[in-house]
Image (cartoon, rainbow, N blue to C red; front, side):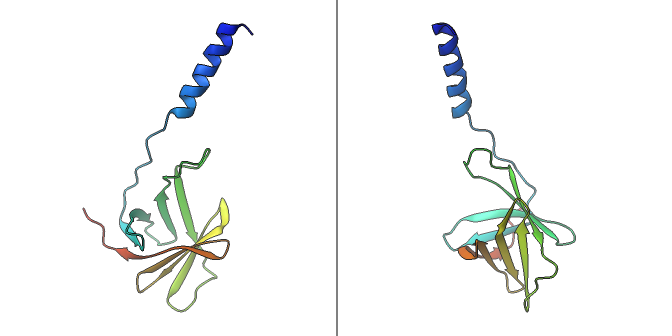
Length: 119
């Protein structure tokens, strides 16, 4: 490779690495207010079997959406459990009281409460 080709390739890789795509927008019909004050919109499927969140992660190769699927066999009292198929260790517990708990590898990552969406 010539010096010009190397510089052109390096410039393309640098520009591609610095570009950040638009975050995916979802039609939220529910929201979670996390204990840190962050409010995150989610789309609850009609059947309630899946919860979809936009993924704002800056991780390379991260999918644009995070979809939690309900685990029908894992009900505990008035709570339901959901998991991410691509990251099975990531779980979400949603209780009828509105309490929401996010787990990763069995450890609590975030806690929050469902709130009414603002339209």
